[in-house]
Length: 341
Image (cartoon, rainbow, N blue to C red):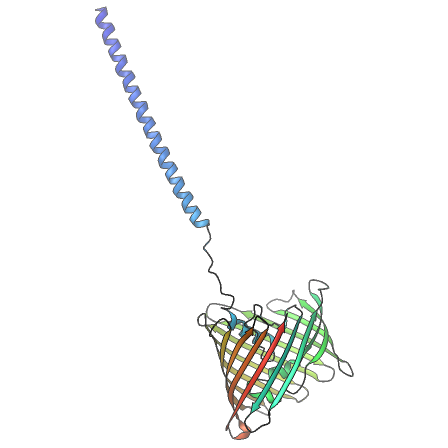
């Protein structure tokens, strides 16, 4: 009996130990599978997080893709003398705080009119800023109102040479909604001609259309008061085409007359160094009521001729004057420019 009891006890103990071992093995396998699942989920989460964190690769931008857009913006901001510098890495910007030298030679020929030639050198020296908002500039430029009234068809009216100005510029940062600048100084004429210019500007870029507004009040001691307002729209159609619509109004106390211009332009990027502009415009006057004085249409061919500082421009078009019974008058403009900045 004792032997039988001992045998049953050992048998039951061995069964219990085997069962315990099997349960521990099963628990271990379960724990291992749970750990594997956890590690898998962690790895998946890490991968997902990595995918989220890793930024998308930015497309490599061609240095000349936005050349036409730069040209349009330069027309808006600078109101300059048709500077064809949009092929360069940095567009000529009149408000840009950079020193530069610009030399150009232009030939204008209108039907039944003598040929006119114009050569000028514009130099700008921008001194280091006195403070965050205050700066001193010496540059050669022409009157802003005169610039606004000149287009491809009215080159023969561009007889006034540019003059040197010395000015102190102050940027207001406390005025909301607008970029505001005050410029005071004098023109190097005999006698000296003090001036003050107050400029408000604002750009509204968006996906549908880009909007730019500009308002300028000018006072010269000799020419008295002047005023300029611009509202322009621009839309990039694709990498090679930009369409723009400009509206400008100007007034000068010297002739006490209001002038307005509306134009529609289409800019085409042909290659890295070649661009073409198609422009249709209308000019109006307020004397004594609002009426159109002329219409014009032109095609401009622009090319970077050498490196990033020598440019060429050829424009052909026609003008329809009210004083000439709206008859067509053809014209051609050839222009070369050298720009260092």
